[in-house]
Image 1 (cartoon, rainbow, N blue to C red):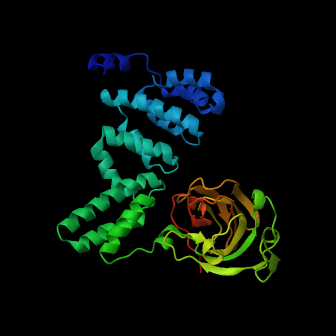
Image 2: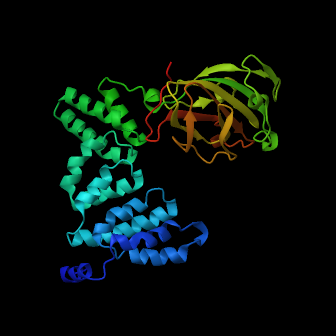
Image 3: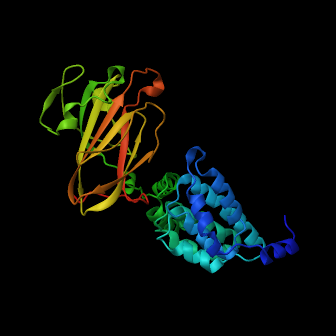
Length: 368
């Protein structure tokens, strides 16, 4: 820990102004994997950590659009500059606050800005917290959701069930992370106000399924079966064990699992397809978020969005986030789901979950 005298000397001499950081920040943002740009980035980092605290907003802004590696370098540099600034009581609080409140900035640096305020000016951060309940950053939303949840817990402990219910319901409106949603859903259910989790998340639950096509020797992933060429819901095709045709399937799972095992039993070395039509009220940016532990591909309106040829590596909510553009009206979604030859008990799952949301995780619901 530096003494106040030493810190005073540090800030009195040798600090780099924001205007002098343009090239070092550019060099740091240029760092790439495999060591590309590492030498320049190291030299740049050593300059940036000598920056005047007034330059913190510029360093935060450099995180906007930075690649993950450069973002980590910048976050570390901010930590050094901010620690020294806070110890010397020179953090530019108003400028950091303005950066946080400007939602044109990316979520990651805004989260860093909020953390700085929490550390240096906890009362300021506390005042800002309620206004983050509908923030574009799901991570920043966690703070007001946690506060409302605590308020509900306190009210419940005092026997004020109506007040607790109101706090939990308000928190649920802003909650976007699975852990907080699960916790709030249980609290609300216990108070007699169950949450429609599939609607809250935006899971797509009603599909047409067709299976099984073959996946012997894992060749089904790259084989173009008829549903990839044309969607004809009245057609019958040769499958692995005989003719196959489309069948209706609606998931009753709270987390929207589309389980091929239910209509087709626990088959191995097979390929299945799921098709649905999503009616969007407008043309808009969106995300298809998928969880799947099988080999899979996803198409939107006939265009392949993404694919993953691996099996049983685990699945979780929002495992894959696929940016898409929905058109106004009917949008066709096709999912290919391949099951491999493994027979261990932990390999029986042949399923996926898919939801439509914006980049905060807020559900996009069908117009009809």
